[in-house]
Each structure stands twice: as structure tokens, then as C-alpha cells.
Length: 327
Length: 305
Image (cartoon, rainbow over all chains, first blue to last red; front, top):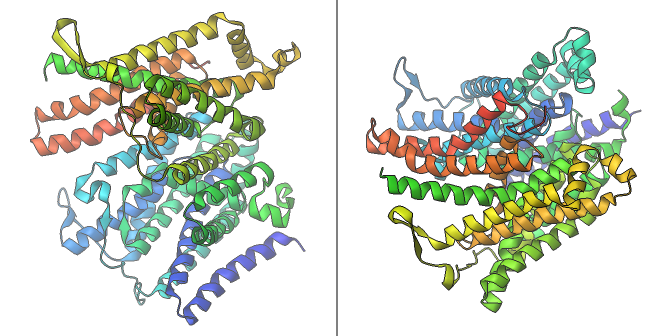
């Protein structure tokens, strides 16, 4: 039997069992830690869709992560101050309802990804990396100077948004929401990657000329992939903002883009579960190394170098071998 | 907005531009010759600034500090090129971005570990402080004027080296066809190390020169790094002249945008709205410039077809 599906199942079961154990042992901090891992995993799955499946090296996914965060922040800010978000030409009120916020965030980050993608996809290679970075930086500086919503200091929200029938302030219940969303996103990405669209996308990553020759313009494929990717990362941004009840321009910074990329690479590029493994590993490292030394980023950097230089399939590739590459 | 202020801000923009050029020159050479994206270039800038601050504190000599920044950054460059960077030349850009991002983490935390989190100070020397009178009664900081001159001299030297010397010929040949010049008997790995060290040294020098105006602290290289990338992309990757034009453009846009846009919006908006709108637009202006350039010339201003 192939190792990778076993590994993936083990990962999902661990992500279910560990928080439940922490809940039973009354360790809310560990639940929150796992929640962060799951949210980062969703962000990584989003980037992996563009990067791993489409070959689009976006160094600006913080734009979508931050946009999701600010959608939550702005809507909740207006809901808690009882002011409308917009009073002209029609009134839009703030909201504290999670499903509505998710929808808005997914729609807006998808739309932003279409806009950024439509402009960026005119370029390729390094220019693509840099132009996506530039868009994220633009939003970063924009939010810093946007004083209505806290500017550089960010925006604090008093309580988490509501989800019908659940108490979202209870760590384990909020974890359940994030975990189920991760499962949905993973299922969706898996289904898309096996669909006609996903196959065409993978083909155009490997050979653009051929895919053009069979009449599938790569531009449309890439743009769709980029939009889906941005929407997923935007959803992760909402969840992250809700977890911390705080949004700030840091969500837009290029370090965020770099970290999301780290999740993808640590786990294994182009594997559906790669970013999940990567995000979990990142959180474990942050927690254990962070406990050992204040300067844990040195070890993180050294590990990352090691993975890039010597273990090119990432964590999953290291354990499960490179068999999927020929799938 | 008086004309004097405008001229002074233009000079500031030029000063910022030539410093960006020192950063961008290394980036664009390394990319053009070796095909490598080096995110850790900002760390070399930081290494230069810290070396200068440490030497200035120990000896009290600003010139020695500048020499130290140049030498230390070049040495750090040689070190990371020899141990890490040269393994990345054949990799795709994704691997390069990640490995050099990892280097940033190592450099930043390492520097924090050695020097602590507090900013160091590097003072401008006595003989360069104060102001100088330029024609038409413009008073301008002597140190900034000196930076502009140093930057222009280094730029001229670099252009001369690339265009007229044997090393320059090899560098240009390396950009065109690296296998061919290796076959012709040029020690390609030595050439690569030299180009990387040269870029690192220029970045270190820029770090020291700017460190005397701003503070010397961990993370100082990152905003400059991103701007230098914008410069390189606007100018066209691999082109030194492109980097020069791009650097001056970005320097002027950034500096003039910061002072002019709020004034401009003040003409027809109330002051507070004008200030905030002006501030947000000016911080976005260079990215808008870059996006605009890439839309019309996807390979940058001086980029090859």
C-alpha cells in the first residue's frame, strides 16, 4: 500500500485526537495552538493550489490573508459600534455572523485575486513573483495609513463572531468549526485537482505550448486557479482574525506571504496534504524551539535551508517518497 | 509649496535614489549573471551597517567604519555564496526565494543575538555635518550631498568596470551564455563568487551610509530590499543602466510623493482628509509605478525582448 494516503489519514486523525485530548486534559492553550495550525493549513492549501498545481509562484498571498482578516475586522467593528459600513448608495450594516462574513471574505478575496491575477499573469517568472509581492505591499501600506480602522495599531474586536448553535468563544467549539472548514477545503481541492479543469491546469504547468495546442488557453486556467487560491487563503484570514479577535497590517506584510510559502514547502509542494503537514510542523517547531530559545528563528531558518537544499519533496516527500510525482 | 522646498526634496529623492542604486546594482547583477533571486541582500545591507557602527564605536573613525562595512559585507557575501548560494544557481526561483528567506531569518536573529534588540547609533562625522550653501541660495545637508556624490562616483566606477575592464567583459559574457565562457577557460565559479561579493559590498556600503542618517537596527534591510526589488523590476532584471534609471525614478517618486501629494490634495480637500489620503497614496505610489511599468513593458524599462 502507498504510504502517502496513510500519512494523510494519520495527520487528520491526529488533528482530531490531539485537541480532544487537550480538551479532556483541560489545556485550552494547546487547543488554540492546534487551531492556529489548522488555520495556517487552510492558508497554505490556498497558496498550494496556485503554487503547487498551477506553478504560479505568488509571493503576495498575504494580500488575501489580510483582506479576509480585514473583512472580519471591519464588519465586526461596525457591528459592535452600531454604525453602517456604507450608508450611500445603499446601507450596508456590520455583522457578527460567521457564515455571512465567510461568504463576503471569500467573494472579495476571489475578486481581488481575479484583479491581481489578471494584471500579474501578463508577466511570468521573477516578474510574477515581484508583482504579486508589490500588490501585497500596496495593501500593507494602505492599511497602515487607513486611520479609520486603526492604521498601524490594528483593530481589536471584543468577542468572536457568532455561529448558529455554537458558542464560538469556547476553544474546542471554535476548533471544530476550523477543522470542518479544513476538511471541506481539502475535499474541494482534491476534487478540483482530479477534475478536467485540474488536469488541464497541471498540464499547462508542465507544458504551456501543448495545452495551448489543444485549445485550452493557459491564461484562463491560471486566472481561475489564482482566484480559487486567493479565496481559500482569504477564508483562512477570516478564521485567523476571529481566533485572535484582532487584525493589523502585519497580516498583509511580506513576512506573512513568506510564512504561508514555508508551510507549503515544508510539507511538500503540489501535494494536497502538504500544507497541512507543513503548518503542523511549523507550529510544533515554533512551540518547542520557541520554548528552548528566544532566537528560535535561527533554527527555523537552518531547518528551512536544509529542506530546500536536501529534502526537495518536503516532509511528506521525505516520509512517503516521491512516488506521487509520477501520478 | 515653495520652489526651494521642491528643490530640496528633489535632492533628497536623488540621495535616496543613489542609495537604492547601490542596493539594486548587486541584486540585478546577481540575477543577470547567475539567475538567482537573493532575498538575503537586505541582510548584507544590515551587516554593513552593524559593522560600520561597531567599528565607529571602537575607533571613532567614520572612514574606517565605511571601509569595514564594505569589507565585512563582502566577506559575509563570499561566505554565504561559498556554502549555500552556489547550490541554488540551478534550482528554480521558488527554492531560491525560500532558501534566501531562510538566510534572512538566520541573519536577523543572529544579529539580534550578538548586538541585542536596541538600535545602535552611527553618527555622521564632524567634517560632514552641518549644511552647505548651493547656488540660488539653497541650503542643504552636507552629509546628504556627500552621499549623492559617493553614490554617483560608485555608479560611474561600476559602469566603467562593466564596460571597460576584463572582469566586466566576463560578467557581460556570463549574462549572455555561461556555458560558453566556461568552455573558453574562464573560472566561472570564481567569477560568480566575485560578482556576489561585489554586490554584497555595495549593499554593505549603502547600509553604512544610510545607517548614519537613520538608526542601525535589526530588520533595517527589509524595507530597502523590497524597494530595491521594485527598482530592479522596473529597470529590467540584469540591466545596470535599468537599475540606475529605476532607482532614481523610485527615489524621486517616493520622496516627492510624500511631500507633494498631501499638498496637492490640500488644494481641494479639508486638511485632515488631504493628509491621510496623501499619505496612503504616496506610500502606494512606487508600487503603482511598478505595476504601471510592468503593464506596458512586462520585462521592465531596459529588459531584453
